[in-house]
Amino acid sequence: MPLTAEQLTVRYGSLTAVEDASLEIGDGEVLALLGPSGSGKSTLLRAITGLEPLTQGRVSWNGTDLAGLPVHRREFGLVFQDGQLFPHRDVAGNIAFGLRMHRVPKDEQAARVTELLELVGLKGYERRRVTELSGGEAQRVALARALAPRPRLLLLDEPLSGLDAELREQLAIDLAALLRRAGVSTLLVTHDQEEAFTLADRVAVLEGGRIRQVGPVREVWRRPVDERVARFLGVTRFVDATGENGVLRSPLGEVAAEVDGPVLLGLRPSALRVAETGVRGEVVSQVYRRDHVRLKVRVEDGSTVDAAAPVLAELAEGDSVRLRLDPDGIAVVSRPW
Image (tube, rainbow, N blue to C red; front, side):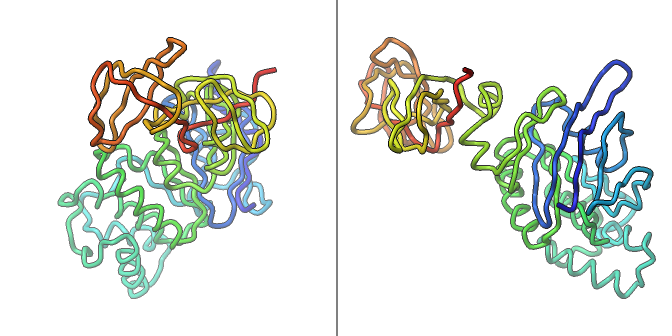
């Protein structure tokens, strides 16, 4: 692995911000550091870049220890939440900044700026003032600036969190494609699960300064390491279940899953969906969302569960419904014994 971080610990006096954190990033891979505010994500990123001193641990690139190597010589590109563009320079001037620092000839600078603007979808913006850009455009310019010197590692610290929801969603999709085209190894810090799962190949979940789980996106989503990680990843309820012969059976129905023996079945709000067959229930309340109706349903054992129905479903309080388990809305957690 090109980047290896081993047992990193960062302390501020008696406060431990990051403890014993280890991770690796492969060639062209996007790894997301995912966790709630205050979990140590940005501190860990800054420690890897050399902006934060380590209490202990080692950061290496292709086996070479980076200790003592100044930030500007690590060949890492950084993009922060607010982009930090230079307001007195136009778009081309911002993107070319790193190239000038590396004494790249001016004709090569111009060609690289043109190439990057096309890559980030801003062809023809060379002379645009950065103060005239939208939030999404500004972040694209910040990304182009970070990519300009051809960094061996790109670090993104909450790059989309300052944007409105619709723009953030679209830019995340565009950024995912862009990172694949650029082929640069990337470390992304985010508290947003959808952003992490849209952009990343693998996810590292942080809590309280510790890495709780690392793995491919689908694996972490479907098999959280424990109940705490599952709840952070959107699980709101757990029920006992037993897996056998590719089927997971629970009081709320059956679902296909390659699991054997007793487990906890974690239910996200969309895990139960209104269907023609399934567990009987009675609608308690409903809330309309953009692409579905969120229901509270009282099932046969007297408990209330979350469920989802199509936007056009005509349901009212007191209506009878049947619910089936949707594989896309569940998580499987090993029992704690």
